Length: 508
Ligand code: ADP
Image (tube, rainbow, N blue to C red):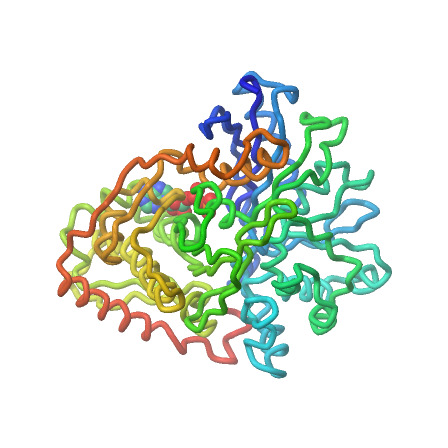
């Protein structure tokens, strides 16, 4: 056991990573490679699935080499992934029929509108836990079938397969056209709009409403079981692939938030707060999503409420790439740190509309409160604060839906390296914010799921013992000032709404 490790593949929005963990949950080695963000038009975001698969293989090699390990040291492989991003490929050739349509992509709004004419946006919510929105995989599959030449015919003939990127990676890793396993786990399936939360099965009536043939759909499996083994010719040959969790559920698992009432918030490209509701399905009345948290083999399903914020770290990337205000993400700290406050400036980053708790596709980004006094430092500060304010809105929704409110917030993701942001987050929430030692919680969660399936870890207690606190930020801001800032933030949010009219929708 001491010489064995778990390898987790994290197929993320901006990059693919392979991380090797030891039994204590510590990172032994990492390989990482970014892939291209293809932006053909405003609102469209694509990835090349072939590039992703190529990068996944490369990062596996990098991680193994850096750790001086071979496949024989790897007890099992876990997969975690950007959720909802949709790949459709031909089962005979293994070739995608179109680029992957990424979760942030808003091109399917007309399909959302069409489906909502009969029953409104909450038409399927009771069954699948989600409102109709461009965010989820369902309308993205429908778009490919409706818009890619020959796709509908090939799908009807049974030649096409659908998968989120976990499924794409699993299928390729286990042999592709030569018997690749076409499966997904319950957490990823719960983001399609096609899975019944109660039975954990695809719903034929919903597939039919979207015009998606059942033959395209992967088999739904638990988050922790052996799905198959890596193909003979791969670096991981014959290693069992034994865990799959969508990235946010994986981070929750990696934070050891296993029980009802536990939660975490991940600050990456977007920001996602997951609140474990145990074996109970809670339907939100405050704009949260109901989703599957995890399911370990045959054990009962754990559900969760989720608040999804589309733009968090990507707002910092926007300051870097589109405005040229900074040359690297961490520079935002320095820029923001040069002023005491935001100078009255508020940024609402509704680049793809507003997700939780507003669900307003008609919103677009707004910078308000500008005066002649405002400068780049204020913009930088306002950008960071926007992430904290959005999280506060989500936390309010969780507290309203759940009987017991949150008493502290566990955090992870790339942005939690920013101490000033974490302090402001604690100030604006009014509860402590806690960062663990291992912030690679997404990959760790997938490793945990895989390791549990093969007996590398004996159970959840074994994993909880690995969790260690690194830093804790206590709220310091006085309540009156906090409330004043929240009032201004909420006013700013109203200014971003009602922007997209019918006639501009096609291009914005
Ligand atoms: P993902 O997994 O979604 O690709 P990560 O968890 O790796 O994202 O986080 C990267 C994000 O964090 C980037 O969007 C980047 O802009 C942001 N980021 C990185 N360092 C900082 C920092 N010091 N301050 C603010 N944001 C940061």
